[in-house]
Amino acid sequence: MKVYLVANPKGGSGKSTVATNLAGLLASQPKAQVMLGDVDRQQSAGYWLKCRPSGARPIHTWELEEGKPAKPPKGTTHAVLDTPAGLHDEKLRSLVKLADRVLVPVQASMFDLMASQTFFSELAEMKAARGLPIAVIGMRIDERTRSAEQFHRFIESTGLPLLTCLRSTQNYVQLAAHGLTLFDVAPGRVEKDLAQWEQIRSWI
Image (cartoon, rainbow, N blue to C red):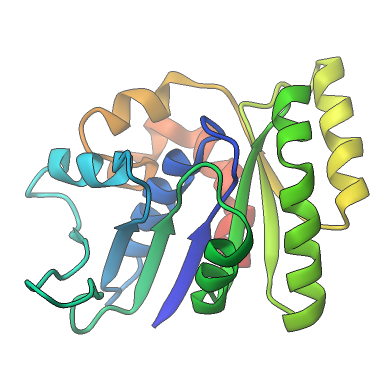
């Protein structure tokens, strides 16, 4: 089973958007059995799963038994973990130990970048120690703006690779409201967004 950790200590960075759409991407692969595990108290991904139509490709959640720790359902091939804000230190390290790859969604505002600075340092140390693949995804980036230039400079300074930048669009909002992802609808409807996910598809 491959485990993908989606993490950033800053609230509102886009973790659930990335986690749900990553689960949708993985579920679109032949023979994949995907679990979306929510480790966030807000349970955004958990609520999203409850909205998912019965006719959509199945994405499972934790298997719960009374008195026992939560675990992936039997036969799970890919697990995506959506994490809480404020993730640092031992909790971060324990989740990273489970991960095969880590995706870090980041918005371009200086507040987001500064709030993530210590986190990037922690990840860089873990990457150096374990050789763990870690990559950044820019969220709601408008490449025509000065904030986008600052964002690119900041990410370069972390030494972590930037996979792609996702544009600001209502597609994510509208699809999430129905428990859907970019990979559940006609490609022509979300063509620009699918193109931005191609680097993520290749990386995973």
